[in-house]
Length: 206
Image (cartoon, rainbow, N blue to C red; front, side, top):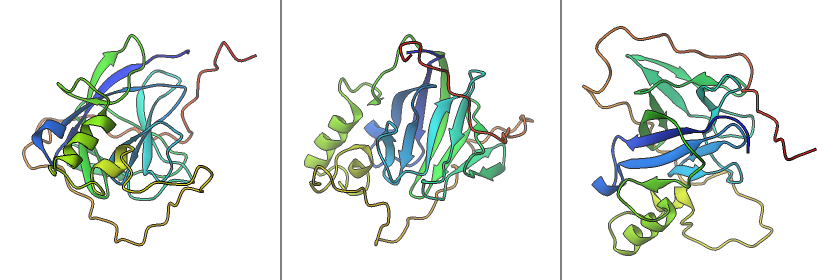
């Protein structure tokens, strides 16, 4: 695996349970970490998402929407916002907010990570999908709301079934960042680039 790995934490501004507030993740150059209707949905194999978090060729954290993704992702910083457009990555800074229909996260950037790690909630000694399954079984969260976004699907799917990205249920509103959490001092403008992030080549692939 090549390229820088960035350790991040996604803080759910309006968690279904306080134990689900902080989700620890890693962002890579080689694969995107996707955010979907139910929250974080994992790697690039998961469809039906709004954007992905990825490390650019110059080792910056970016949010990227692609042509096959659902519309609705937005980055907030210092009272300003920009809607994600396919092919135009937005560079994320520590403290930025990433809002999608039904979810608003504050992004905490922790710096270089030693290696990739599966998303896990803070203080939970298991993958995030297992935590959500436990909470759903205990009736602490709604399966179709939170658990559905992290692999705890409410129904089984056939092995070769084509992912269904069209949804009959109404799209939930996109939450705004909580009052008082936006920085009061002057902040940098939001950097929107005109090209997707350069992906570092894998040295193990000829």
